[in-house]
Amino acid sequence: MSHSPVTSLAPDPKRWKALTFIAIAQLMVVLDATIVNIALPSAQEDLGISEGNKQWVITAYALAFGGLLLFGGRIADLWGRKRTFVTGLIGFAAASALGGAAANEAMMLGARALQGLFGALLAPAALSLLAVMFTEAKERAKAFGIYGAIAGGGGAVGLILGGFLTEYLNWRWTFFVNIPFAVIAAAGAYFVIREPSEGRNRSPLDIPGVVLSTLGLVALVYGFTRAESDGWSDAVTVTMFVASVVLLAAFVVTEAKVKSPLLPLRVLTERNRGGVYLSLGLAIISMFGLFLFLTYYLQIVQGYSPVKTGFAFLPMIFGMIVGSTQIGTRLMTRVAPRLLMAPGFLLAAVGMLLLTQLEVDTSYAGLILPAQLMLGLGMGTAFMPAMSLATHGVEPRDAGVASAMVNTSQQVGGAIGTALLNTIAASATTAYLTDHAASATTPAAQKLLAAQSMVEGYTSAIWWAVGILVAASAIAFVLVNTGADSGAPAASGEGAEDEVKIPVVAH
Image 1 (cartoon, one colour):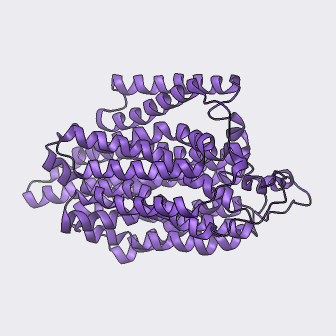
Image 2 (image 1 turned 180 degrees about the vertical axis):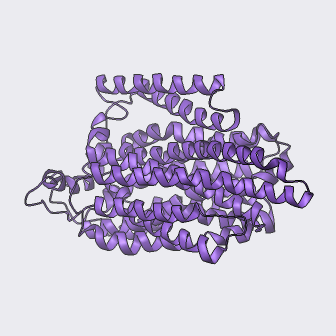
Image 3 (image 1 turned 135 degrees about the vertical axis):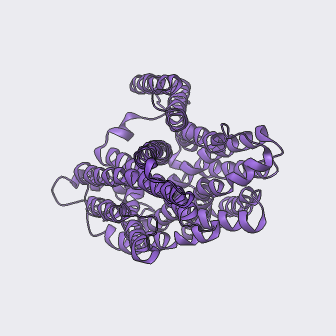
């Protein structure tokens, strides 16, 4: 393929088939993030995992995945995206088999850490493969629309599937279900994907960068998970946050000085990409918190079964698919990305605002359903250009690490969202209970008070989520200033220079 910024050779004829297998892999990774949450209580009981160690089933995965993403992205650039992608899939399948067969706590935690490690290899490779295979603006919009819908809606699919498998089969199937996904995606990718050879990065691996970024991200993610269970002023929590600041600052200094950095600072400092990473991370913070609260609300307060809870999330999935494949894809080549991202995040904020009105006996059809539709539509519309812009104007040798940054902002956002919003909810619940305890004299009144205080906690945290989404919208509007992804140089204006660069990603 040519290195010229605007012209390129004929695109890969098998690219749409390749997209199918990349989408299957992405769905598996996103599913895995939520499917285990539903299976956790049963697995905890079976394996005798203590209450204190329960969170490690989630945390072991999050730490390995979040900590190793940049490393995984750079490996994809150095070693080849297709090879990294297939290796990641095979490893993920093996780790899932180990998790499903877990006989004790140690085996389960080891399997989760391995899943995270292989996930960190395959997730950035998947996104960077899309970036190098789809070069024509309209096709690129369509491909990223499909990818964006899966990235956003897959979590809710995980809730449905997790509910079904846990209720009707056994929690072990929430692990085994990954194996067919991984095998199909790996076999398909091996035979179908043809990766352009010119985009390979042949520089040596930046070992200090790998060590500093991995330790820094692990400390950051662990700090937030620890804050959730032990409080923000806990000595270990504070130490983790301080360590993460020191390590990540050292990482930035190292990257500015070494000859072939793990994360070239040029990937971060371009304002459009920086704006995408930041606004996407914030949006994920609010979404992760919401998934958690709505799941609890429907199951504990409203008494839904796991399967019914999963189905209750369908309007959000529907909204995401429509938002990203219909609205985002159709408009991406016509309007500037910020005019999709900023209103998308705002619409999601309005949906979130509706959910601040939750009561113990709120009607699903009257409030939760419209709120979910708005959330899904808004997020789907915003995710689509965000995913595409994440590798916008990046030199081919940096496509993997730029893709890893999207995943990193999502992972870190997820960890922050879960910890921060959970802490806010817990303290609001406690405060409400303390204030109203005297009035609950009968067992029925105490039961009602418990439900009311829970809902009070959820709505307090959802108010924060609204604010975070408004901030994401503002950041996208201010920082993202490139023109529509037309693939042609702009005639004039601030987006001109950026637009000439768009097709570079392809080569």
